[in-house]
Amino acid sequence: MDYKNAGVDIEAGYQSVELMKEHIKKTMRPEVLTNIGGFSGAFSMEKFKDMEKPTLVSGTDGVGTKLKLAFLMDKHDTIGIDCVAMCVNDIACAGGEPLFFLDYIACGKNVPEKIAEIVKGVAEGCSQSNAALIGGETAEMPGFYPEDEYDLAGFAVGVVDEKDLITGKELCPEDVLIGIASSGVHSNGFSLVRKVFEMSKESLETYYEELGMTLGEALIAPTRIYVKALRSIKEAGIRVKACSHITGGGFYENIPRMLKDGVKATVKKDSYPIPPIFTLMANTGNIEEQMMYNTYNMGIGMIVAVNPDDVDHTMAAIRAAGETPYVIGQIEAGEKGVELC
Picture 1 (cartoon, rainbow, N blue to C red):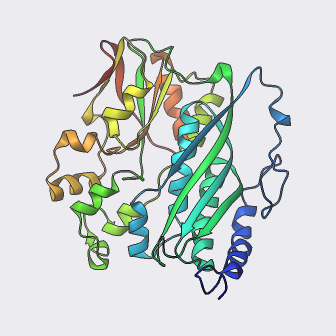
Picture 2: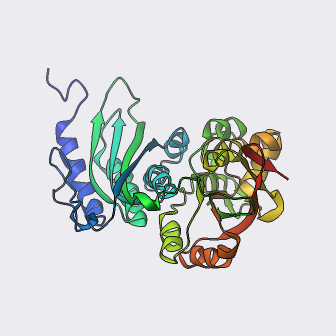
């Protein structure tokens, strides 16, 4: 008896590392001081000494049950983007610049080519956010996970000068809410998605005219990464007063998190186009509108609040970063919360 007979293939682990190195190399930043394969990743803070009060911000998350979709479609090259996005978008939401990322993959059987595909997506997400992929872990856990399944989670660290932290404390009535378009369902609410639609190869390969693609293609579209958009706004000299990453819990849970006491957010539902995947889901599953807005991003992945005088420049900065912005509402005096109208 040996470790391989027990279900853990050490040689496959070595091969996985070799295959993923080409993807990881594309994410490197000058501050990275270590090579992949060591026991830890080292990142120099030397260039941030010119900040008045350099402050670390961090985020950790997983992909959730969207992974079930990847298993069914046997498509593993974009799911890593979702993992990175869930972490770095939270950092950007606080005004931070993502610096580095670490991933954790737990699987029933280490298939090097599949692991490399997953890490390829992680590396792509890191490249989109200018974060270095400085380490990670692939754990082969036979008997714990089915052989053809895995879990994926990650952890990111960023930096921001304390004076540039986005806290919501500066919000005032009449500040304007600008929403940035999502790419679809992103990586939340897939437990409900899997109840609404039949999760079979035939169902996922069904083409829908209103989607302009198959159901599977629409659902597995990777989460948008908004780091460049937030950076573009900052570089334009605009102060973002508050920011909300619209993830699990949709509008009703996430928008209040950006507010201070004494103000509420009013959002106009007809101020932007709702992606057809949400309409299809609501109609197919007979889901009430309130539940849709309480579960999904409904087409808006990030919301920023700015001074009314900064709206045009903010919209231009977001467009310059390749994203699509909409004026979706405003801040008003009132009990902390969100009102959709």
